Amino acid sequence: MKQKSTVTFIDKMAFDVELNGHHFTIDADAGVGGENKGPSPKGLILSSLGGCTGMDVVSILRKMKVTEYELSIDVSGELTNEHPKIYHTITIEFKFIGNDLPESKIKKAVELSETRYCGVSEMLRKASEMKTIIYVNGEEI
Image (tube, rainbow, N blue to C red; front, side):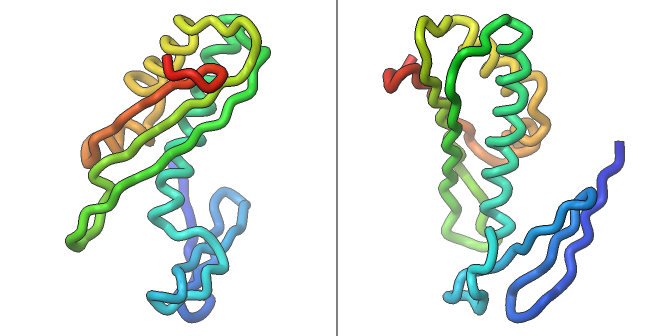
């Protein structure tokens, strides 16, 4: 399946992005000539990873009949000091909240996303050290 994004210069450091009919603005902060009108391209990589793995985990848990929970995913990255600056380390924190959550199923769903289904994770793993932490009701499992 081919995907296409068109990125059109607006002004300063801002660009309009069209992706499959969706429009949004990307920009840089004032320190590099932007106005912070939207997320940075590099930051969107972290969001893409969180969305990709999150969708996998929700889908897998649904198949495992686990549906009653809240989930948030924090994704952070540490950049190299030299150019081109890349994320040398990326940390993904899955935060589940709910009653009687089956930890073994949660762990399995996260593992399957990371090792089998999430293409964003697979691409980033080639360039970055990936760390995963899972919390259930505030406790690391």
